[in-house]
Length: 228
Image (tube, rainbow, N blue to C red; front, side):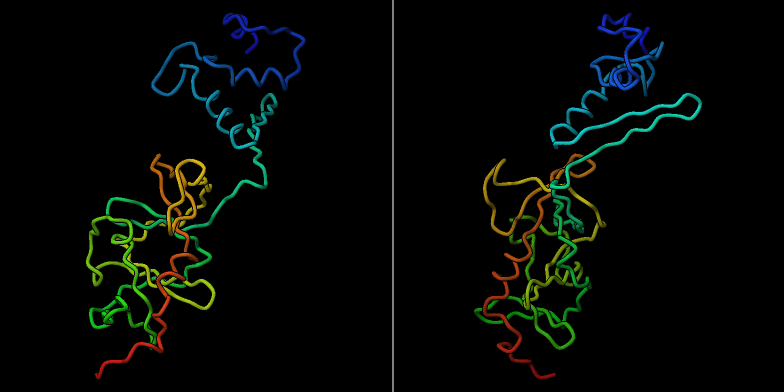
């Protein structure tokens, strides 16, 4: 590594401690590969990795032992907001629902879905009538499925419950929360955003806000059960 660094004109010396030598890996354009291949040799990437970690307030440490291998340790601050969430598809978009609010998911029957005059749509779940909130309608998207063919995600905040209508459940993830207000503006029903593994931006739903808004005036005791 020292020989290659000298070839590239980097300020190095034979007396450098190992900890400083390993940091040469993060120098822009630095590579020890003799030839450029499809996967290595260009000397780009590691400097970007270190910069992104530094932007999060963290650092990356390298240690290496001859004949044993090398280890890379990434340290991030405890204050970094990481959320356990369920990613859901709504139309062509992806949203994150915090796992802490999710009770269950189900596919409703057509007879369980009803519209209450002046109050909106509700769904019958084991004797309770819960407000039905189609996320596609809320965010101005085109749903891929009808309520009967889609998935309902039952969420709860406090003593109130709401059924979120989505097109598909994609999976569970740990995501880093990014403030939407700092980078854009406040959006009702959204607590932040995150960048997914494929580079797409997904909005993180503010379930407490959605539940309070949707459940107002739609408690089960206000809904008259229709004759069987």
